[in-house]
Amino acid sequence: SVLLIGTFHFAYFNRDVVKTSRDKQIDILSIQKQKEVEELVNYISKFKPTKIVIEDYPDGTTWMNRYREYKDGKKSLGKNEIEQIGFRLVKKFNLDTLYGADAGSIFYDLYYSKDSVALRPTLDSIFSGWQNYHYRCNEAICRLKDSLNKYQTDLGLKMPLLDYFQFLNSDKALNRNYGSYFDGEYFTQGHYRGADALAMDWYDRNLRIFRNIQRLTSPNDRILVLFGQGHVSILKHIFECAPNYKLVKFSELKNYN
Image (cartoon, rainbow, N blue to C red; front, side, top):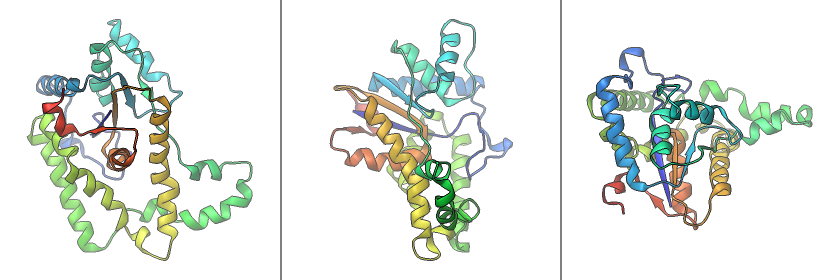
C-alpha cells in the first residue's frame, strides 16, 4: 500500500512558480506549530510505514547524514518538512533509511546528451518560452488562480496543520492543481508544442518518480511518499491506476487499521 502526502515546503525556498511572501509564511518552529507537527505525525503514524520516500534523488546522502546527527542528539530539527515529518517517523518506527525518488526529466537527458548538437534545435523549438509562458493564462483564469492561491495560503495561517494537510491532500485540491497545467498560455497556443513540453518535462519527471518508487517496492510494503503537493496531484492518478498498489488517501487514515 502507498500513502501519498502532498506538502508545502516548510522552509519556503520559493523556487516554485507560486511564491509566498514572508508575512504569509508559517513559522513551523514556533511552539504552537511544533505541537501541531506532533499531532500531524501522530495522525500519519496510523499508516505504520515500512519505507519513507522523500523529494530527493536516489543517490543522495545528505538527509540521512542529517538524520544521524539528529538521532545522536547533535542536531535539532530544521524547518524542512523532510526533517519535521520524515525524521520523526524514521525514528518512531526505527527505520534504517529515507529513500530518495526524485528525478530529472528526459528533456535534460536529451539536451545534454552526446547527440545534443543534433537534438537541441528541435528541443529549443518545443521549449522556447516554456518557463516564461507555461503558467500565463487568460485574464479571467489568472484572476481565479490567483484568488485560489491566496485562499490556500491564508488557510495555512488560520487552521491547525493537520486540518491544512487534510485540505492540501483532498481530491478537490489535488485535482485542481493537476488541471492548472492545461489552461496555461503556453499549453493552449499552437498545435502540440505545449503538450510535448509538458510531457517531456514535468509529466515525465513524475513518471520517473513513480518508477523509482516502483523499483524499491517489496511485497507487503507500506510506503509513505512525502513530496510537494504539485507532484502528488499527478502521482495520485498514477497510483490509483497502477495494478500492484493500493492507494491509501490521507483522509482515510482516521479509520485506518
